[in-house]
Length: 165
Length: 116
Image (cartoon, rainbow over all chains, first blue to last red; front, side, top):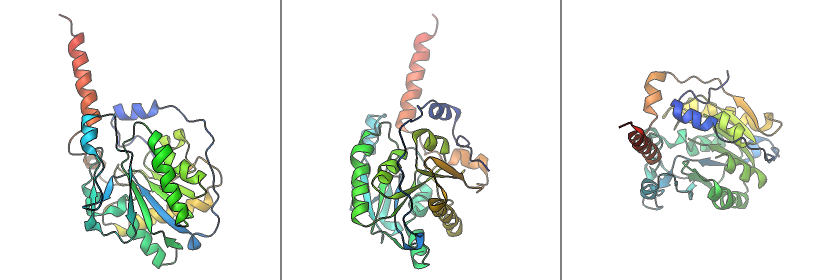
């Protein structure tokens, strides 16, 4: 089976995506250094998940005022996060299923189960949440991305699973 | 989002990128892509379907040792039932600000171009 990238998109959005420039830069490569059963894993999601009452939501008010802007910051999500602690701030998807089960977008609880089963070495203390509507990727490339990479290195992460919504 | 995979991979961490739009992952350049034909907002499956989520995650993790060169995509065979419902249901309750803005601008232009 070949996944149809445009199956769920209205034609206007599909045509927009098809018109984006093709990147010619070299793609970085880090081979997997050891078996998954010994790897420490971390997660990145773009659903706009944040910790209610502890972290500010992604700034949707500014996006409403400036429709081409999307909040480029990130939130650190601890591995002991409970479903009822999270909020979801994202104006481009229906967030109701993620509010019911965050694992469809940031699968912290599934990774804890894989850790218990010995299928991965461990889930790192921290996973990371962003809000995926970014017309301009400069902040992700120059600020949020490098900060997340540095924190992952500090926590000894070998593998990152990214699941954009 | 592929930019995050590139930054993290360049820092010495192996990444796998689970996406509904492998076209964009490849166009932007992504180390390892795993494609799923799921509606937006659901990259790892249905809410509360633990088995489906675990299966997708295991398939994604398996791609880490299996993919041997950058910008390679593995397509997963999962089916998402009830297309007619979900092609509408994944959208937010109201259009995002950029869509509202573009629609209003198109409307103003059409109005301005209407012959007298």
